[in-house]
Image (cartoon, rainbow, N blue to C red; front, side, top):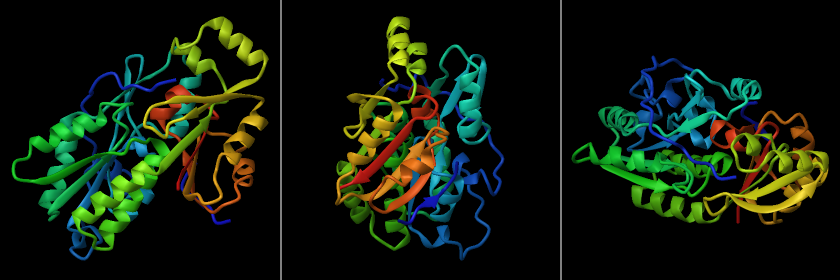
Length: 316
């Protein structure tokens, strides 16, 4: 199998926190939404349709940069300390910080102004149409912020698509749209193919611990204690865009086997995300079809999924 490694309950965002002004750099420009275009011969200058998304897609800056994808970051607040996703808070740092806290962090959608700045930058660079593909609207206010931003820019052709997905599922949808834009597809073709792909994208996951559900008040202390003693691992399905319980397994080994066995033989666009899971290589080896990429799951899912969460997305 070929694997490209790109880096090491119901989720709700609570409010819109304006993104900080970030100075662009080769490693942060795509995530910050301000991309320094150095050459008129660059990929971005050859594309009339540009793709925007949010950091809920969990794409690495390197992958986003390679296809000219602009990623507008969500915000994460631990107590009184606010971070910008993947700008000043890496996934690794996020899990480290969360393990030291008794309360869960809050995740917040980007402000409409953050999306508007990204749109304006792309239009100024020559984009004729912008397609913003965002985190499931059932889980976050991010798509609404993107939609509001589009109304602030008069005369611009800006389309918004609710991916009805999250993390690696959303990432796959965004990547395929960006590839189509790179290859010269029209906006109508890209919208049609993206909408179709979103409807066929499935996202499943396995939680390793009940601690975050307890911290978030979704289960009581007694439930958490019993679950821990019995080594119960919740299984979730986010294929509809909302988090639904898909069952429970006794032991992590059985839970990961359930996840691997849930993958149909005709699955395409397989991607795996994880929250610093030490056994991720073993899980990847359980997959019997080609895996496109493996990457870390960020705060949007990680806040509630907790450390060592493992997610799987595919299309049929």
